Length: 250
Ligand code: 3PY
Image (cartoon, rainbow, N blue to C red; front, side):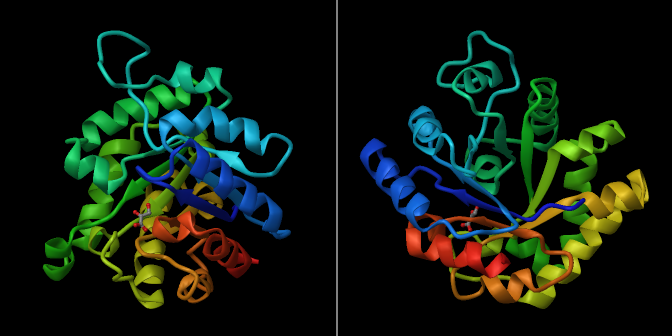
């Protein structure tokens, strides 16, 4: 059964006090919803978030993790460290990680393997840059990202994967894909997975839209049959906006 998911990517925002305040505001207003609600605070606030959301339906995710089990990787965080504080979901491959921290499909494939070995759920981001969209290469780009980072996986691994399509030209720019553009590429992504793993895996796969999804445009984006929720940036930092987005999925 395909799940709906609304995930808030807090990026490098909110100190401990602000994180606690935002969580309290979200919990106070959290509506009944068919969607899984996920928040991804920064590493230093994950333990606090786990503590504050205990007993609630909200799931806490990391924004990244390292592929190695442990060792000389200054500044990095391992899957076991996340597990030890009760975090079993991680975003991987966000375009900001690809762009500013040199993450590649190859290094991401290793992260995916480690996360799955630890029983994590993964929100895996894909998406094309503006020049690639303008050159009509967006289908090709997302297909190769999926193939290179995920097509080595066995079929059963896909129940732990959520894909997030985030056109890079729509991240932090205020630009959003139109609902038609989102549906077109989400359907293509589902077909790409179906061609390799079969219809059941593809039908069960949750594909989120990300990239300036906000309280105003969420309902129109989510109305599409292949858009199963959102990975939300800036609007996830404002409790009322995030709640409106959760309500938009129903
Ligand atoms: C955005 O909407 O800006 C995002 O990058 C969500 O991950």
